[in-house]
Length: 300
Ligand code: FUB
Image (cartoon, rainbow, N blue to C red):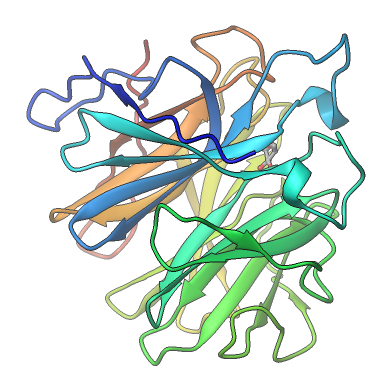
């Protein structure tokens, strides 16, 4: 089921990479974008919303069968490398469950590890190149019931897996093989907000930033907390992006590319349907004390 299609989405203008003409692509619906830099290229690993299938809608109304991979070197033109993983390749889920939710991908020792949630468990597919082919392991990662995996590789090479479960954010250190836990999972406490999911952790100037969507009022805003240790304790710092009216979810990643930080996120401006979302990006700025300035979304 690997589709070899390559589509270049053009006509996107960042006017000197100052503001995006969001959404970033319009030929398919893309949600939960994780942006990563491998070499000199920015890759985006989003999930994929499709319209209803045979009159069905999946869990929470989402229909998410597979993952496309996108790349860009100028943040104006995004190449769609086609499907890098499809639900039919995953032996440990029910057929046609359409629950291929928010993913992440990292490089370690020349291998590319693609982490994905499916039916409330977290799997890994491995490739020799960012564009694949990705070969899924035949069982999920033990001990990781939940959704929205995110990997932090620390400066000393230690890797941590974060994910969401029952409105909490959980984490554990991984073994060097990147596919097994090296400790019992812990819950990251002190985040002080209600319904949390979609963790994205990064490190800047020795400080760990745990960023996450939180549903306080029926739609998700993106909040963050900081710590001097990867597993906390974290201190809540505030909101990075206000909630979207009517879109319900937001899901993001934060990346530095060519010296500039960016927030990738999603919204439903293209469809006006909360289960048909489109990925977007805008510049993100830090204050001198390390706090993050709120990002004003550039909307369609
Ligand atoms: O895209 C499906 C789910 O919606 C994600 O896993 C959540 O983070 C939310 O965006």
